[in-house]
Amino acid sequence: MQGKSVAHLTSVHPRFDTRIFLKECRSLAAAGYRVSLIVADGNGDEINDGVQIIDVGRKPGRIGRMTVTSRRILARALELDADIYHLHDPELLAIAKRLKSAGNAVIFDAHEDVPVQILGKPYLWPVFRKVLSRTFAAYEARICRGLDAVVTATPFIRDKFLQINSNTVDINNYPIPDEMVSPDDDLNGNRRNISYIGSISVNRGVFDIVRAMELLDGTARLSLCGTFEDEGVRSQVKAYTGWDRVDELGWLDRDAVRQVLLNSAAGLVTLRPLPNYLDSHPIKMFEYMSAAVPVIASDFPLWREIIEGNDCGICVDPEQPEAIAKAINYLVQNPVRAREMGENGRKAVQNTYNWPAEERKLVDLYDQINGRAD
Image 1 (cartoon, one colour):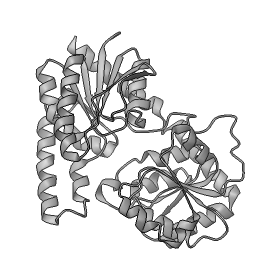
Image 2 (cartoon, one colour; image 1 turned 30 degrees about the horizontal axis):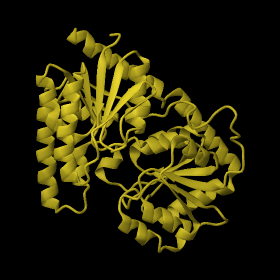
Image 3 (cartoon, rainbow, N blue to C red; image 1 turned 135 degrees about the horizontal axis):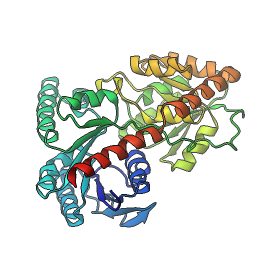
C-alpha cells in the first residue's frame, strides 16, 4: 500500500471542505497514501497538510461547471494517473467511465441522496420532479454499478447503494475529537447567545429561526454563521423584526466557529421536513454536540433518536417559531440543565459519533481496493 496515489475530485466544494479535505484527504495522507485534491475554485495550486491541491479554475454557472469544469478535471485527473480516484459530485459521474477505462479504480462519494433531493425541489413542476428523479436514479445506478466502491455519508444512503454496488460503505461525517473544544476551554461560562452554522436558506429554516428571535425573553442574540444561498432570501429575512437580534457573521474558518460555539447556549439545526433531510446526518448537529452545546433540532424520527436518546438537546417542530423560541428560552433560563445536556452531547461524540472510527473504515476500504488491484 505504501506510496499508492489517490486523487479526490470536486467541481463544487471548496478546497478545505470539512468532509473532503479536513477528514478524508488528511486521513488518507496520514495513512501513507500520496493524496491529490482537484478543485475548481480559482485560488491556485498549493500543498497543505501533505495534500497536493490542484486548481483547474472556476467556471461560473451550473452549465459551465458541468461541461467545461468537468472536462478540465478529467484532463488533470488523467495526467495524474492516480491508482484510485474518489469523485465527490454527482455531475462527475459523467467522467467515471473514462477514468475506469484508463485502468484506474474509481469511488463515488454520495454525500446526499440526489433522487430524493430532487423530489424536494419546490421550484420544479411536480410531474417533472418525479420524472427527473427517476431518470437520475437510473443513470446513477448504471454508473455506480461498475465502480470499485461507493462511499455514502449516512447509513440510509448506504442501504440504497448496497442494492446497486455490494462494495458500499457509510463514512459518516462525524466530528474530529476535540476540534471544537479543548481541555483548557471554560465550558461552564456564561453562554447566552444562540448559534446557527452552515448554509442559510428557506429550507434550512432561516425564516422560522429569525421569527423565533422576535418571541424570546431576555437578551439572547443569534450568531448566524454561513452564507445565504439566495440573496433575495437574505433581503427578505432582514425585514423581519427578529433581525435586530441577529449577528450576521458570514462564512467563518474553523477557529472562528469554535469561538462562536464556546459562547453558545444552544445550536440550531431546524431544517424543514423535506425528503432529503429526514434521514440525513447534519454535521452541524454533531459539531454542536462535540462543543458541549445543547442542540435544538427538527423533530425527525432519526434526529429524535440521537438527541433524546443521548439527552443532549430538544426536538421541536421546525416550522413553528413559537416552539423554537420556547426551546431557546428554556435553555437560556436553565443554564445548569443546558450544561448537562451539552456535556451529554460531548460524551456521545467521544464515545460514538466521532471521526476516528469512520477514518478506519475509509482506510480499510482503500486498502481493500489496493489489495484487489495489486
